[in-house]
Image (cartoon, rainbow, N blue to C red; front, side, top):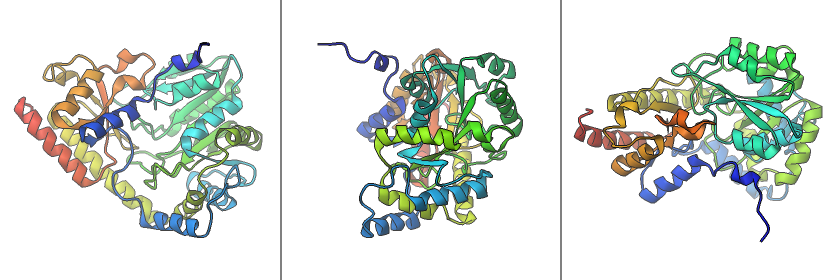
Length: 393
């Protein structure tokens, strides 16, 4: 038979999603994949049910229901400081995942390069490859996950088409500062480069401030701002996201989106428009829960012997496993993750899946704390039982 696609041999399936399958098979505690295991807000669920009963069950407007695009524009202006036209500068997609690949397919030509900070969310590398771009990686350095301006400057060249910025960042929890974003913006202007910002964790913030790159001088016309209802409203399975961009870019994103998925789920789009109008109290309550969960898990991990710092945003913790490798009789991140779920039932993500050179993450794993207290307390009990046995408590 004829040879299958060579491009699909250049990357693997998602390690994050694989760890969820492993966890489910073991009946464990899923601190690997970043989805909440507590209830979604009652108001957004009722809005979805109401939309179904109102017969919003057929194809939507391909690039997004008018009601939702208007709600996105209002929230972007209110919270992000981004002024955009809902008719010409917003594309509603099947989650931020589709928004990212649709954006890359809309702007990339053969021979183009994209810049990605690492450790990175694992979709970015394959997305670049699938769109025909060559990724160039710039390191975020632990423990504060800062980057070298010199290294970033060297990554830019005449082939650079775009840079991807995820703030707050998955997996590190880094919140890019205004100074860092100004440095990135200056390089984008200098090299006439686009910026693609993944701002899906914008409301899950503990330190610093959330700044949308599109609001900095010279960046509105060259920035694609990507977001979704998944994380902020705890509905990761609904798959409603969007991309905000200049009209010329949006026209191309909409073309790609149309032939990728036609449209995001219609009733969930109408429910999303309700969620985007939630009062500030909702976001404050969400942040307060995650702030307490962050402190709890950081403390628990440190007691067990992990080295880790509290994230500035999002709901992930990159933990260094160096001091625990011998105790668990393992020598890399994959064997560590496998052994951890075997002896404690706790699922995590091997750190190498977040790096272009896997060895950089061989002593790291990622935990998430977007879980209800019953889950976190069960993890505490399981950890203390095992780590007490090996003398860590």
